[in-house]
Length: 305
Ligand SMILES: [Fe+2]
Image 1 (spheres, protein in one colour):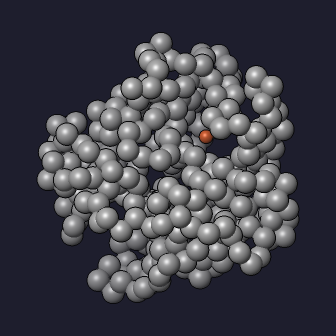
Image 2: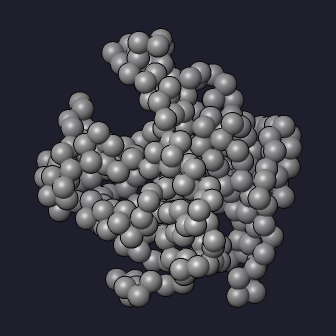
């Protein structure tokens, strides 16, 4: 039984730590909690707090030299960018057992159990740790230079050849269940679905290519089946775009629309400006509107348990 008690951190790997901290603290408005050098694995690392009350933190790592194992990730097809997500569980041994039962062979690394693409992890690395009980308290809002005004991580999106196949895998591995999906034919070049994740204060999206000229197909060919983007909610959309301008960061694919008469807005920032991860931010007038703007309930859906 996998008893998830929270998300500990989202991890990214980049070639240089300091410029990435400028992005995360400046544009993103994250607050640095600590920075350290890990000579054992040849990295420099920093841990930052994501604004809001989810308790999810953000860890960024950079190699000290090209002998670091991290360098292989950064130079490989999936890097640089998001590398792993660390999940808090009540019992690590039980989690390892659960992972084996789901059909993957977890690796042990220190006080964690790891399921990565090397051992059946379907393109992204999940790390399980026992809850420390030290989840961070609510963070204060961004200070200093204008930032996006992020209030929470809404979801991570995983590109994969079959949305239903990956959703089934995450159902077995993490207990995720589908809550929204785009109807077949809704978009000519992709189809996606959204998974709810018991014990986790964020959602997981799976996106698959459709048609002959899909940007998702090109993404998978280049980077493999891995994280396609991360989406954050912001408190004020105009303030977020003004912060992008302030930092000289362009946005694209901006929408200003409504669903059932409720307004929402969203836009993207290219990975070249964020350390390697396509970043989406959105604002909505009412909670849980934007996520369903192009989606319907799946046939399997039942109201909240
Ligand atoms: Fe998304």
